[in-house]
Picture 1: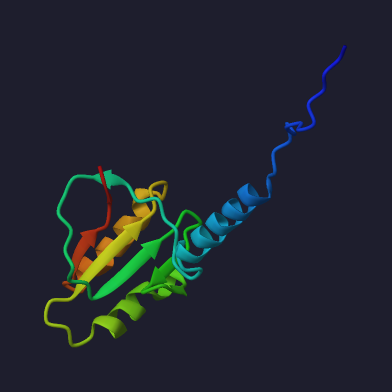
Picture 2: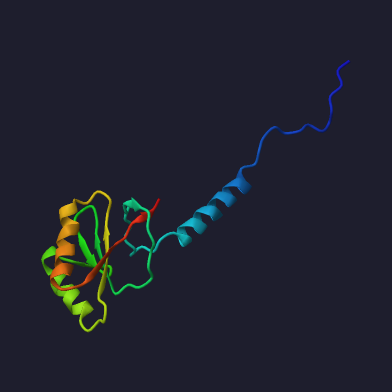
Length: 128
């Protein structure tokens, strides 16, 4: 005599609630990620202290594109733009953000401009 139970448990798992959670997480991370106009750089690592005083930022990315305060400019016009931005400042300071794989001669070029114009240069790095 075979006895069959009337209540069978289904071995299937509903994935709808899991997909809802994954979708909400995706939306959350998309909204909280970096702004689309921010420059994504991999800075070199170093120990040091950061300062909050900043007059102008010069960024060099891996494609050797130059940015002064997130405005892309040609390499030849970096000095002219820096003079224009730092005109009239008491202690003109440049934050130099060169990506990790950028040749040192590109960073030295900006440092040379700062030296000729008596600007202070601070090299931005990632903390170790």
